[in-house]
Image (cartoon, rainbow over all chains, first blue to last red; front, top):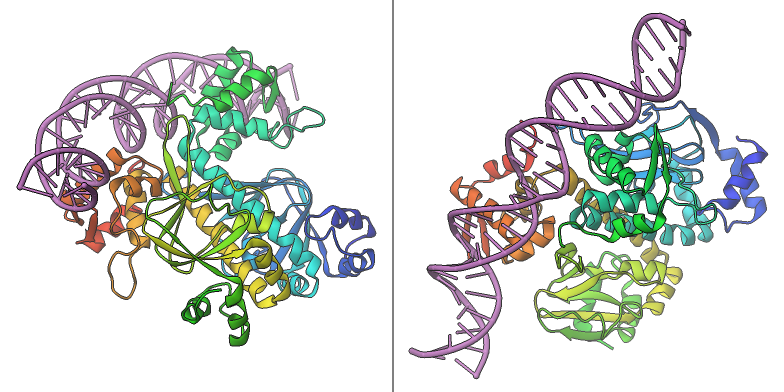
Length: 232
Length: 232
DNA sequence: GAAGAAATACTACGTAAGTAGCACTAAATC
DNA sequence: GATTTAGTGCTACTTACGTAGTATTTCTTC
């Protein structure tokens, strides 16, 4: 059972937003609040096979690791009101990925079987789920073609561009990440990302400080995102 | 309206398989049969925004192109009883990809709005759709991490391995593709794929002839799939 | 504010993959 | 069966990326 204050969260959630107020109230009893410390991987303790999570606060990355090279690839960087793990929810079999918090995170958990029942019972959830899955597919298609067809500087520029808040015009979600984490987000390595960040700095595109990226010249950044150095 | 003989197709289809016989019969009136010639891109003529397709015969690839380098990336290679475009179905906005037939293909089309209505009206379709979408997401996750974390020879070996028919032990679906098409499937180029195919041949792993790949040594192929040359 | 940890900046180097070009060959097409 | 086209095999070359190593800076925390 979680507090009333979480009603607002559910009301803004992509899966629950269309439900009537009284039903959301009823849901509160099924949720549990969990706090995960920063930089922890709770997969062994709390398998996503049994629980479905909504992020109330903090960031969680879903990532893969190549055991040989120890290289990481971040598949999704989840934030407030994102949910996981959608694949376990749909397929009831293990999703071979890791989860790790980038901040201290507050999560709402619900038994995954309960969530499955809700999808069947409440058409509104089901109806919201479909376009949500579509968006996931679209994001992954974009990711794959980016990695294959664009070079690192383009990918880095695009990563930054897609995380600019349209209203504040400021970088969000990834603005306080280390070079290492940025590299994981575009399928590269720390040293290479730093090399390109330095070049961006030289070119007057970005202002860089420790765990901080600021945009100085949006126009040039847009050009970098489009430019594919492999051709012309 | 299509012929009775397509009932068997629908009965085996991932989305329609759970529907009662009489309902499938009723569906027949909504479908149209279309034949697309080999190597054609029918996107402009028959936008997937308005129709939903089931493949009855032949192969269709969904791919992206980088306009600058003209390089292609095949996202999905669809075969009999696969459907497209699932993203247009879910999101009702343009899916920025191309479609092209690799063989002469026979397709069943249904107005996409009709398909949307069916999803709402028949829970069985909706229920089948969810794990189908999950599989798409899983495939794309695998694709992305492959491209980032594995080198070309591993990706080529894995591509071949995933297309071996478990029963016949023979290569299917991709066994008659050109080096060019194989390259598109792993995010590389013709010349590079050929280089590795030649090496596989030298190593006694494959037998290669024009538009034909045969497996000679499965064990060695499995080793290639696991080996990541970038480490060790 | 000293000591330690974490993140960054930079240099040097090796290499897989991409590109270009061309000869050769099988297979459509007329 | 002559001609064209598509696909393959191969050589030579270039380069962006990844790796390694190290110095430096910035934060943390005791």
